[in-house]
Amino acid sequence: MIKNLKWLVLVSLTFVACSSDDETGIDANSSDGLPLTAGTADFSKYVALGNSLTAGFSDGALFIAGQQGSYPNLLSQKFALVGGGEFKIPFMNDNVGGLLLGGFQIQGPRLFLAPGNIPTPVSGATTTEVSNILTGQYNNMGIPGAKSFHLVAPGYGNVAGVASGASNPYFVRFASNPGTTVLADAVAQSPTFFSLWIGNNDVLSYATSGGTGTNQTGNLDPTTYGGNDITDPNVFASVYSTLVTQLTAGGAKGVVANIPDVTSVPFFTAVPTNPIPGLPAASAGQLNQLFGGINLALAGFGLPARFVTLVADDGNPATVEANPLLIIDESLPNISAQITAALTPVLGGPTAGYLGSIYGQARHASNASGSKDYIVLSARTIIGTLQAGAPSPFNTIGVSYPMQDNTTLTASETAEVKTATDAYNATILALANSKGLAFVDANAALNQVANVGLVYNGYTMTSTYVTGNSFSLDGVHPSPKGYALIANKFLEAINTTYGSNFKGVNLGQYQILFPAML
Image (cartoon, rainbow, N blue to C red):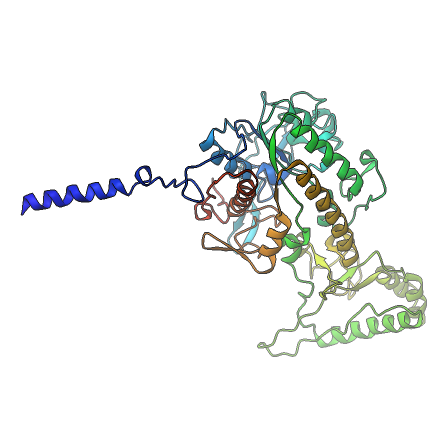
């Protein structure tokens, strides 16, 4: 009996050996089970260019763990299996995040989800000093905050320009010299392969500021732009062509990604346009009388109504009433003088003048398709609070006092962002095709995440704030799991274009959110 058991064990071991990857020829690292190959690409020297998405920015900050989970770093780990070289990252000093300049904090720490589901800055000291310059070349050249034209701007890494905003503190840390450009430092490394994902900030900063910047379409001089402005599409096209031309001049292959619709991210969708519950009956009646009167005056001027009828609380806890936010829309004709004149006989000059000043370009937010407004995530803390210095009852923000321009991306501002984004994306696709580069349709992927969800490794990736798997607590940048999904989308594009067969990373190995302690 013992002799037979011995033989049974030997037969089992032989079966296991014959079923191994080595014997069957199945490669567990490849997408198709065939031996892993780089295809026609050479990954021996990989350089990544971009902005915060390339750097691994998450939860409102850049920190070591986020940098380790950046999509370029995940790609480099796959490339290493087919001869890819060392991938150096300009690591921050800690997992707190934030920046110091001359010992003074200029960027805050990362966020974590505190009890009560409240995004809260982590405790601990920021230790990354911008003026402590790193030496050597770095493969991850993702620069948080960078716009397309910043990658070719001399002096973008000069510490002397940080205070004025002329340079970028993240690039200052590892620029080869104060006068260099991001592109020059990338090309100096003679990359054999590159990734380029740039252009998001050319519209994103305008959008996240609630459209407080200027649409610079028609202005071809980016040195005159403000920080929240929309980049002229011709400027973008010229810069992008320069980037791709110089990166491919030595024969390097690469992968590029287009720009997602900014309104697909939780920063613009987490706060609804109608979060105001049913109002006390007296308040609803007073405001409806006032706003109804303004609507009548608008009709007399041949202008459309701006206000809806507000709903009072019906006293039934089983029903939920929802009223839209009161917002400012600077694209509207300013009728402050007309409101003042109409209300003066009833309310007197001072009160009528005050109401004219705050309601001249006010309206209720719209959730209708084609005219949808977006309330920015940072506005969630002020809705329903009292406006300092404003008289009661016209001082409740979002109800009787309009939310200001920086809290809302209006429908007209959204249209400006979309027009610019579409133009940028046409440029990116055209240059990818002309140079034979791999192309990631990040816009389509994010639209799927935002609208119906994208299932990967058994996880449904959505854009729901906090619980949707895809985004970090800042509402713009991906979560660890979100960055893993992005890496897989890049690998898919690389496989398609260059005949490689990389297997994607397993999303199950990545967190949804970073904890307070790392």
